[in-house]
Image 1 (cartoon, one colour):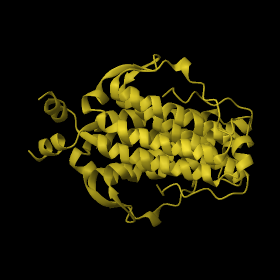
Image 2 (cartoon, each protein chain N blue to C red):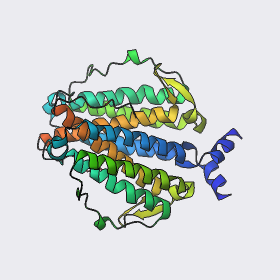
Image 3 (cartoon, rainbow over the protein chains, first blue to last red):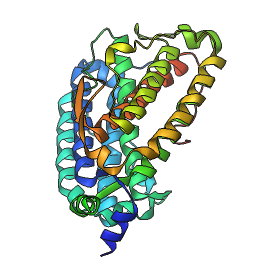
Image 4 (tube, chains in turn brown, blue):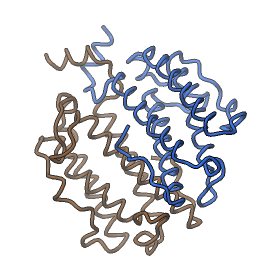
Length: 167
Length: 167
């Protein structure tokens, strides 16, 4: 009953199901940006002293996996426990495989997150207090933001990036 | 009654009101990226042959104004009628003033857009067929994407960009 009350007070912009499709569409595009990099440049190329794209992709993965689990069960890992290092990832293929495993984790956990959970205020990663929907939007916006850095890197390398509107 | 039916079938991720705050928070950050550019570099600096940030900011404005009006009334301007040219905008101050006028237009029109309007499928700008919420997310994602280009430009110029998490 509480669900109905919430839903009729608040006008729906987007449903939880549609937001998952939106996210996975973006992740599909980010995957194609990883693929577009030449192997060596993926791990080394930089503009203005910023991190290579492999490290940005790793940050995106590092947020997504504990992020979607935290959103589902409210048991947030502490932010100190992940450092976005590449660890054992040394090739594009390994990075893409980790990306695809992440896709499966998201598809498994997201449907467990209720409307109420998304509206609840929590301290994500033991550090960022916000409504869970806003915490999630931060993950997504951060991915779009870092992927766009990858677009500039590709352009600077003379490589045509994937179309932004293809998901 | 139809509103209730829609709302109980679909789990709410974010309300229309919260999405307006989210957008204006992003727009506030983009405004500070415009401000961070030295006057001349705003209109001229580029990496990898991409457009200067003033032109990217103009594209964002050019989509936002007819975009929010189209979402409100369903009378979409044809895409041919806007070309993202800077027109009479020749200074940072003029660009910021246009940005602030856009902020007011958005605040005026957004509350007129109902939950039903956002779920409706339309041909935005006479060209892009999609649910209106997805069309809007494209506007927002496009802004985050182009603003991130601005971040790389600033870094390449040796300028610290505004914090991504401050809105």
